[in-house]
Length: 120
Image 1 (tube, one colour):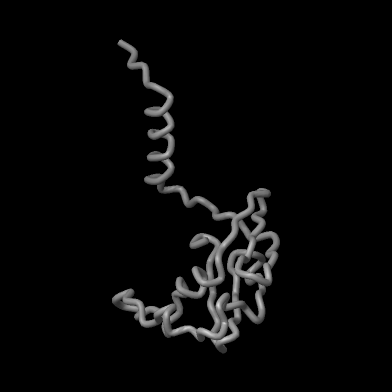
Image 2 (cartoon, helix red, strand yellow; image 1 turned 45 degrees about the horizontal axis):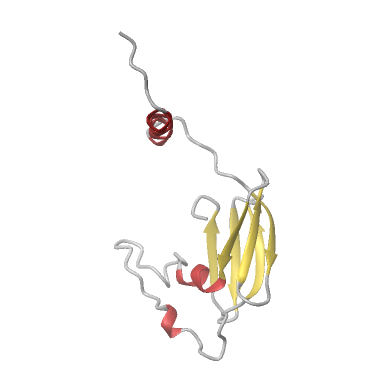
């Protein structure tokens, strides 16, 4: 007997098979970055998809050893510690690294964050 799966079930099976696949899945490369003076950084991916990230969210999710304890993963940085005179916490400099596989942000607080495209 042939088992007939519904659309939702077959979609779930495809997603699950991709999640547990042993074949590495390449992550999208960042093609272009556009900044907003107010609060957003927009990323255009090599496939044409666009994503937007709030500056505060990016700064709060920095994974460098100054912000996150490397062995335990505990946060060492609190976004509440940011300078209250800068309500948007804007970046000073943004650059693509490794042909778009990472994004480096230099913040106005003399701090650098590196985000891999797989995280974003």
